[in-house]
Image 1 (spheres, rainbow, N blue to C red):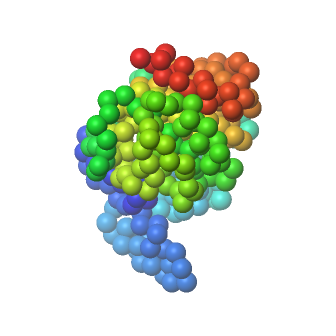
Image 2 (spheres, rainbow, N blue to C red):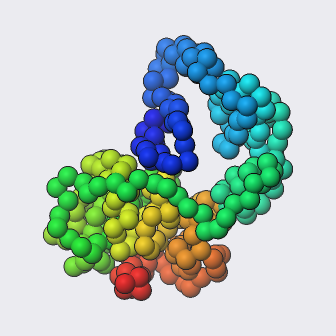
Amino acid sequence: MNSEWAPLLDGNPDLDEVVEFPRSQFRGPQGWLRALHWLKAIKHRIQADLVLDFQGLFRSGLIARRCSSGLVWGLSDAREGAGFFYDKTASVPSRDEPLHAVDRYLGLVKALGAEASFPLEWPLPQGSAPTEFPNVKTFVVLHPFSRGEGKSLTSAETAAFCKALRPLPVVVVGRSEEPIEHYPHVHNFLNRTTLPELCWLLRQASLVVSVDSGPMHLAAALSKQLLAIHTWSDPRKVGPYRPNAWVWKDAKLGPMRDFPNGEDCSLNELAKRVSDLVEMGQ
């Protein structure tokens, strides 16, 4: 996995070893050469009897083949020619079908004869409080920015959520250079948390409000209550994998289990409704 995400697997009881993919080292004019050296080294380090490629891209398929001394399994909807590296594939519906990504990946597990038990468990780090975290017991985590194009809230929309929640403490997290307005009840932790610290915040928060992003999926596993904001992405495919999580999309608000049904709610109205969701979760 990419090195920046490796802390999420620290202490995982189901893993013997984590092999990091140092993606940032492969950028620039000489990146391809460093990548070739890495691929050569990984072949000598790992030779597994069975390799599963859940990602289904050329890069993951190539790495899977390099690490295999036996069979490589992948999904039937793999892209970028990844299927060229597979010995066997698990048949899954077309990507046009509204199948959640987690269920798609579980199709690979089921093809090998294993059955998942629900609800799924996610052994993520307990984490610890960020440095200089205020002495507050009840707070909302707001994650308004995403690297995905068109998924982020604007600065004005972020301010609207902060205003609607006062005087309840709001902790703003994530990665962004976007400025946010200062309010006494808002604690700005943008660019200031590690992944274990983020896990701690998501566990402790009364409610997490997040745009479609990696932290939103962490919140689906860790938080008491979650509101996921989707602009163009389809919650049926990439929404929070939790039936009681709340989802907003296309001016509709409702639980994930009922999507695409929901009550009419504009984004401005949604900011006002967040405090109601906090009370529902208490």
